[in-house]
View 1 (cartoon, one colour):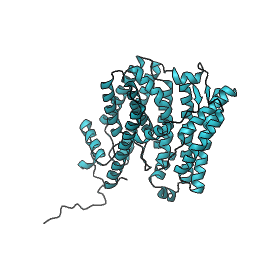
View 2 (cartoon, helix red, strand yellow):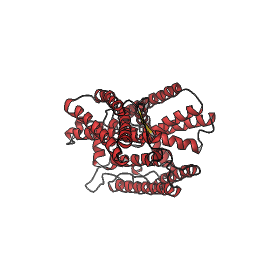
View 3 (spheres, helix red, strand yellow):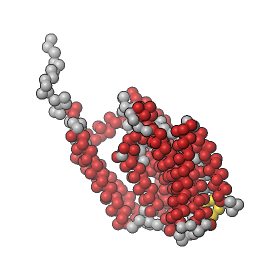
View 4 (tube, one colour):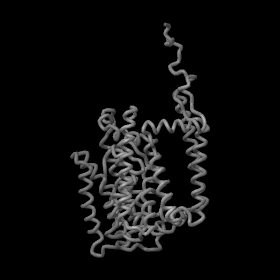
Length: 419
């Protein structure tokens, strides 16, 4: 019986590019096959969130036709922006497998600082915002030192910080307990009544589509030059076209009412910037490496202490910035700012959006998707005039499902050798 094994000669290429296994899938059918293979391997991406969001919107729209009205969705964007910015910081800290339980207190303290420095002390509002954000950075630096130098678990240090910073917030506000911000000020207008011009919204979406198209062709070219299969031109064009049509349609819908809030635009801008940092910078690659395997990252020459310091500082700074935006939204700084469910919603948004609790997997868009899910639940139940107890229970159930999906996907990736 003759063997069918090929013998490699010095001129035989290591990769036979004519082999069917190395051909690039073409068209929609190829995209569907690739997507199914990724799901089977546990690479679910944003699929569970998008499916869940579609189910939530369908249910609430059926129960109350006002839910998907442009006016209600615009209010949702305002409310989602404040917690969303805080959740961005949680994504950073979860990427390295740690946690910050004090983000709510940090946001409340930052809003109190803005009120005291701006209204009571007469500082320029810009300087007050910078000081509040810097205070958040200092808090993150303290957490990093406790973690790096003394090995204090982040759960313990940030839990202690939650209590200490809450006390500082009450102390700063004093006996009055609340400070009203000037209603006609630019900061309050940002939180309540500033909207993008329609032409700017359409232009920014078109610019994002061009960037997505350029990135797709660049990545495909780089993979092909390395001898790997890359996405076909038709698939890249299809994805970009869907992106452009969907987002321009959403912008058109909002612009028939008041438009897209500037505060939400700031949030999305931070999401895009952080996504770029995670995917296109050396810092982002090192954050993923430390989150995936700290010891392996250390042995490869990465200064893990600096990485932990950077994410702790970034998390607390974003929490402080979120507190500033929350004060703008409410036009006040009070003892209740940052309390209640702010902590839980910020953490839940990151996890529901797809950031892994185990570290090493996630992206900035997790905060965007997750907070939209949470805010959709809150808005829908409010329109139905149901108690907040149901909102807590439903949000908790959604969070539990997200963690279960994350754990199952992780096991699937391990079984496929992709952990």
